[in-house]
Length: 238
Image 1 (cartoon, rainbow, N blue to C red):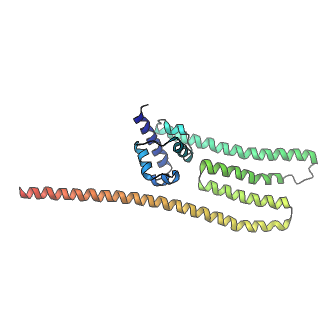
Image 2: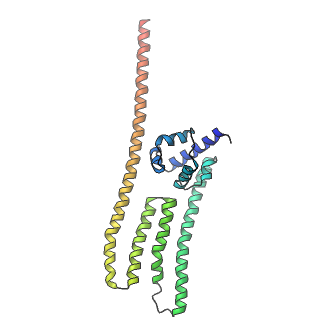
Image 3: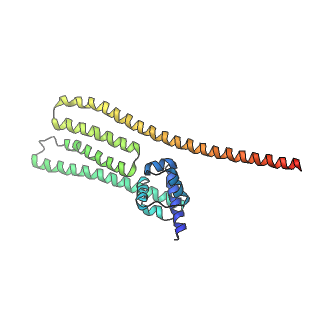
């Protein structure tokens, strides 16, 4: 593969991944700490991102670096992207199952050693914040979808409250659940603000893009009008 073809392949793949995820050049540039002009150069094939940026792009769109570097048909692109997401979802589910399997193993061992005198079912309550932490890590690194992160954070919050409640074994600790309500509201509004900022930035980028297009269209129309005037004036003189 020659250099020109390689640049075209990378450009096409970056453009496909960006548009598939409904991102503007401005928004992608902000995520990568680059300007929208740099993104435009990559998508035109005038330049190629370095290895570090390629890794960031791959992580952002949940693909491998190799995926960006090799040519794909449209069907291959859709199939490969879905396949990678499917594998990552399976890995996240396996991680959660492993945590509960460990909790189950602890439950069985303690039950055999203590004749079931303890409240062993609480072990599964203690596993909830661990599972939430694992899922939050996967959501933050791989998915980065706001609703998945929000659900993981919420699960972590209530898992911690349940763990403290049952670990202390003082029923007056039910007030922790009252405390959890405003914390949950803070989390909800914090994510709402972040999503609003994201949409605002996207809207600003679209407006800016539309303004540029309108400006170009007006300029072309003005030049065409002047050219028509000159042609008509020349015709009248003749």
